[in-house]
Image (cartoon, rainbow over all chains, first blue to last red):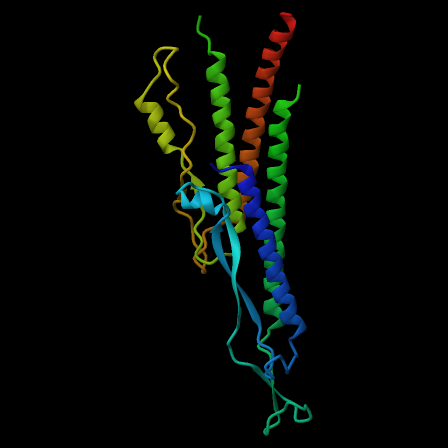
Length: 143
Length: 127
């Protein structure tokens, strides 16, 4: 049985996921120049991998349709090449005078962040619509 | 005299509300997965209900109403265009579906409330 609570759960799961995406984009931007991370190498940009998942796993196991929420499957490190900049005075410069910088592209992160913010907004609007429907249904019980 | 009996009317309105909820649930699931790669947008199917209604017809008032509530099945939206990541969710379509479902729900609720008001009136006035 699909219910409005399942619908709002799906929307709520999306809010959490979009927030994670914004967090990832923000930490990427913050570390755009970090040449030393925990493992001593320059920071690698993080990417959030999403996966669709039914919100009521019990109903789904019974083969009944339920709302499909979303979940963070993994946060992976982008393995693409580091940016390189000629800066011989930098303490982390190699013997040719080049510094390896994180593979973060500010424009990319900003676009990602705007996308996540818009999706957050859309899901918030969805929750508003669902709430109105529930309120409307409750009016039936009023004398 | 040709009248629609109260039970049939209430049942029809109830079905309208159930279907609105099913559409709402499917749309919110789609909206939640607006950025999930390879996610295919779904919509509830009411074809089985329609078929059931065509196959059986209540010809006497004491027949059981064949219009059973919509089964909880969904299908992928046909002819949906996938983006480069294989996702077929369209933000505006989903929000429109939700608004329309909400409108249908409110419509049925208003009619049902009016019906119940009449019933209440009949009960209280006959005291």
